[in-house]
Image (tube, rainbow, N blue to C red; front, side, top):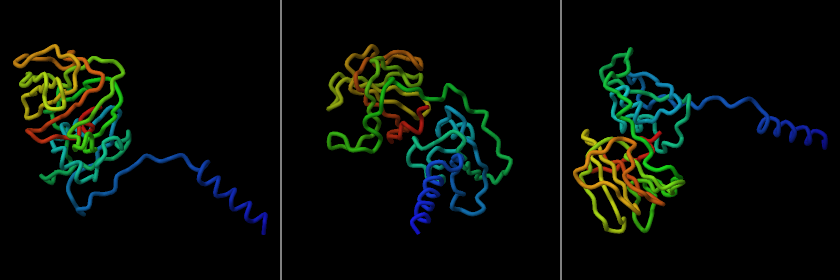
Length: 214
């Protein structure tokens, strides 16, 4: 009996710690049976935002259908279902996509407060990034439409309008090098910060930046 128990423990150990190699994560089939569309296999560096632009499908619809609530769970090789309302099974990527549409990280660092998390007794409408350096860059090209030295509890705050319904907010800066009315290019240094509060807004509605950042 003793040897049988030892054997069972050994088998359990083998199965749980030294078993088969992990298989790529695959999302379940969308809830609507027969929904027209196709699967997209995530490539390295792709974001939900980029995938939505490639196929011309709204990001919110993709996240809703695939039950994606946390962008950090998106993995290379994962299958994302792309709905096709026109019922065209041979749906092809949209030619409207350009890499200039992509957002870039405004600050090199670590996310210490995520979107929707409570911070200073408020629901965070962006992410807070603790700096590994201090240079803050424009996440996309656009026009500076707002700057305030003392904006509420956010200190030096600026907003860049990207001309397509999206804008980005950069707050808690220690120094700012641009002013309202300036046009800035993607990747250009615009400020310095030790911790940056960063938002992406679609119209006036805050979006989860992690769906847009690579």
